[in-house]
Every structure is written in structure tokens, then in C-alpha cells.
Length: 238
Image 1 (cartoon, one colour):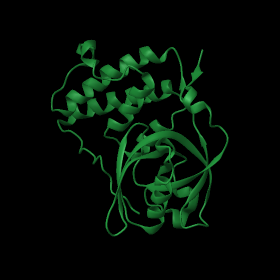
Image 2 (cartoon, rainbow, N blue to C red):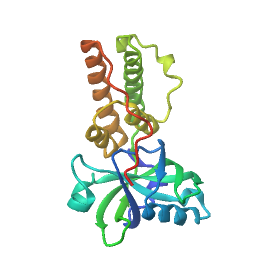
Image 3 (cartoon, rainbow, N blue to C red):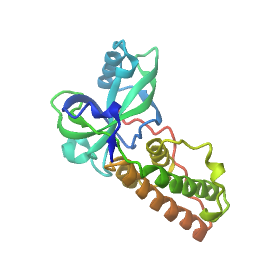
Image 4 (cartoon, one colour):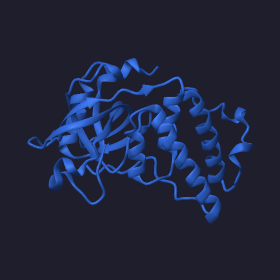
């Protein structure tokens, strides 16, 4: 029987959320540092820092489709699923800019956006993480595929079947957390990462992730080259 993670189940009612369009897919649990210099986003940070509960200092990060802008294309410029970013640290610079550190929080889907204000705001619905008892064996397969992928990135090639299950001890036991870790760690195109983020369930994400891990590990072995690693600190377009 499927269950829905209680923390995320609460919010199926649409709510208004300030949105920060970026050229990055933010994954729950991922650390995202940002340099804030545009006035509308400075005001947003000021607003969030005034909230006493740190866990409530959240705004929405949503990836922008390649070649599009919100100003020209509106909602069509944005992928339909994003993740909240929770402000964990903030350093106010002398000229009013901020350097902030955020962590990915809750996934959401965008129902509509409002461009009337300087700051884009969206009507969003938070998405639950649908989990199933069958996620655990799936997670075991993904963990081994992920270990083989990491070894391939180091310049070696190993058969997934030869991976010692005990070597996965440093990976999360929780299948949902593991699915997000792999989503963040894979060196893949943004639209593929976005597809993983938007998966309807943990099982669906794990199945997609394993297929991508096997594909990428195979490509590394066939080409004898590793993909260019992405920066963990993507530039802010604000």
C-alpha cells in the first residue's frame, strides 16, 4: 500500500509563493548559494529574514527553459515543477547586496504566475512524496548503479554486479532521499534532471534514475571520457 510523506501531504491547497527563476534545477536537500544584487530580490531577502521561523523563510526556485525568458514568454518559460529554497544563512554586504545560502525544501507545481509586481509570484501546490514498500529493493539497485557510476567518473570501469553491497553504507537508507541525491549528483541535461524532480513517486524517480545511471556509465566506458562536471554554485541571473 502506498503512503504519502506526512510532512508534504499537508499542502494540497494552492498558496502564493515568490518565485526566483534560475538556470538550475534545485533538488530537495541540495545546498544552493546565491549572490543577491537586484533590488526586487534584495527586498525579498529582507522580507524573509524578518520571519522568526527559519524553516518558513522560503521562496520558490524554478528552472527556466533554454532560450526563453519570463519577461517574454511568461509561464511558458518555466518548467512546471520547482522546489522551495529555505534561507539558512545570509550575509548583508555594505552596498545592500546579500550572499545567502539556501537548502532545497518542498517540491511544488505551478498553477499560475503573476507578473504584475516586480517580483514574480506564483500560485503553487506543494507535491507529496508518494512512497511504497517496493521502494527499498529498487533503492538497492539504484545504490549499486550509483556506486558503479561514481567509480566510472573516477576513470575506472566496474561491472555493477561486482559492486559489494556493503560499499553503499555511505548512501542514504531512505529511498526518497537516495532518489534526490542521485537526481542532484548525475551529470545530465537540465531537462532530464527536471524530469527526475517532477517524478510522480519515489519509485518512478528511482526507475528513471537507474536507467540514466546505466546509460551514463555505459557512455563513459564506451567513450573513455567522463562528462564535464557542473558547478555546484550556479550563477544567479538576478
